[in-house]
Image (tube, rainbow, N blue to C red; front, top):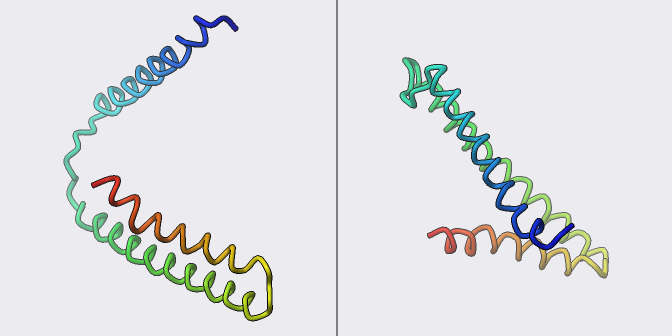
Length: 104
């Protein structure tokens, strides 16, 4: 592959992707999607809120189970359990501290 093609290929891929997404948005608009919630939209908002609350509990429970499992491995004398523990703690810190700070 020539050097010029290597330089311009990502740009052309971006142009094609943008045109594709623009066509999809225009098709949604032509189908009558206006961005205004229909009658009964509050029920859907309630459903989404309930799912978000359930998701919070699911993540909290899963994280608790992972920490209990790693603690059990440490008690049993696993050599790699501390590594896994620090990776889990690092991931939690990344999600809770670093990502919101970057997005702010």
